[in-house]
Image (cartoon, rainbow, N blue to C red; front, side, top):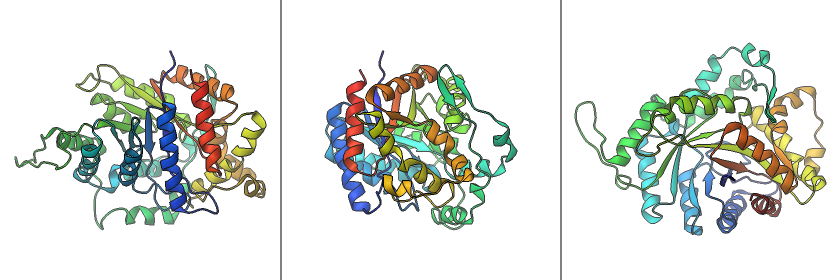
Length: 371
């Protein structure tokens, strides 16, 4: 049976454009996705990136929800290390008050994940080798050891929190969000607090994760749906899904595990056009993995002008190799392999092109082929 398709959007800023253009494009694409039958439209959270406008997902979710009728709208994901559970519940409760039953609250980790990567031994990634599992490429993990040492990243992280603030344990934050939504929040001293708006909000709570670590465990143990990340961390997707399912306990939300798996796609009418439109992707990923943050999305001509070194190619290889690019039939076939191997109940696709019309057309073609 064909599983539902949903969309993840970063509100990308193209070279030569600005944030206003990107946000108008996001609203336009969301309206089209609503018409095409996509199940969800999620907005990511990114900061300090000249090529991404989705720095405040709650604000953008409210705008998209107001511009659409049927499609669920949500976060992919709110980074809990940057704000308190109460603030998150109030924001999403406010949106839900105007758009009840259509809002997804996706939660992700931030500071804790960076600390784990910093503590990991660099040789762990270099020892791993890629493999193909039942037709799905699982590349070796990307080695973050150089990236996490970039001083600008630590500086930027410090700007996202109040001075001296400590990020609580992720699972504890999830529990606080659940308590505020249910109206059961109580302090260790027995004091109660109520989120208004927020308490009783009809939001769907999700956890997003890139590995089999705490995010997968927290989602499974609380019986929440889980989104596993193939488009950014393809090497860990099977581990993440397995850890979630192993930890899963039935809840009032779910009787069985529910998994969404993300994928990066680009669809065009023929292979040659798709390959041409896909050219800038590697240069864009390179900007992220060198610590610069996502640059404004280049044109194919700008991408052609870049001289690639072996080091550059190694930086982006796993992302390029696991992107689904081609005709509607080719991409749909690749996504069916991803769904079969991961056992996904739903797929979350993301597409970036320089021209907005090409991105809209990609989603149109994919929707037509996904039957």
